[in-house]
Image (cartoon, rainbow, N blue to C red; front, side, top):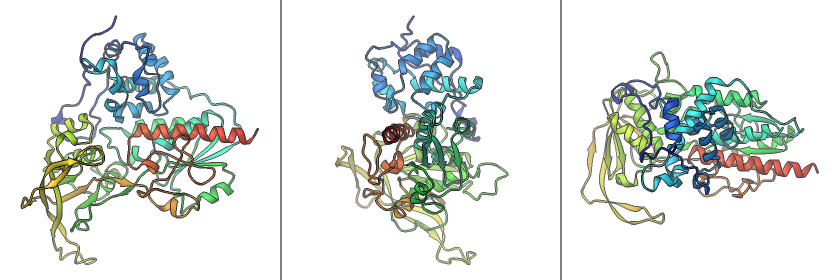
Length: 473
């Protein structure tokens, strides 16, 4: 019998007063009863609009029907046909703008909690299953995957299932890409990522770390080593800055550096030797999910005050509503319609390396108002004359976007990129302008969502399979 409650089953979470002082996961996950109650809200629509909203086209009504039957492993098998990282997607994907935005139940209430159900199913599987996904016999073809983030892992997994010999080349010392260096432990525990990575290893995928393609090896050398196709899923790890005075002062981080120090290098641990800001007053410039991650991490590292400084209003804030809500509950202050113009500091006489490089003591900001819409339809922020003021902070974290690292592009002939540094690809295949080379995820689009990167990895895997199958006919 359908559950016609208009609202989702609430997600159990840690209390804000407790979680603001630890790095344990905030959302605790559904119980079996919670999952069954929420699954019964699904109407099993014949048109399945939710599937069309999923970048990897998970058969959502089918897996929810399995939950209704208490066949949780069967539900996982349905999800796994489309998604290589269900435990990750269930935690960090913006379902509210994708599958859930198409849910019929959302017309007169809240949509079905598809992401919460996906997480439940994946966690149940990880807690109970011991089997490895089946793969076809080896077909004799070798494929190289550059980067072990969401697009690379997805491409590798799909090709491994089809019988390809796949090697993943990761620049960092740990596999997982943005999932391990960018997303904090309290949103995505690293044991979850490690589980997914180890499952690929069990399927025969070789993962080599500390391999910087473009430096350790070039793409040309990969082809010389017998790889017949290359997928570039190297992400967008090059941070952007505003170009305002004072960005070279001590105490100014990019969000990438700040989160990498905390997440990958474990600076949040009491016994860590990785240097990072702890305590003080922190301004995070930006309004996306990465900005929320940086602000909430700063809270947990003991900051006295944390500000989100964003030049538009709350309505334009691009971060997920859930992340904004959690940040507010944890004490983050939102300084909206506010734009930095300068970071100010004092000279540090003890710094013998660079006497001109001082430490942050404040950030000059100007107040903004919203003017006419820009080319994307968002109202353009316009400075209010004579509205400058100084925000008293000693740490500034810039979270205004990233772009792809130019190393691969600069060491490979025939690879064309757009003005933002992203590889130019055929949308239907992920094929680049270099024969045999494919690309997807943030390396093409710039910083985007985990699930969209996974979709690009699936697209490229299918195109590689088609091209290499035809090659041997």
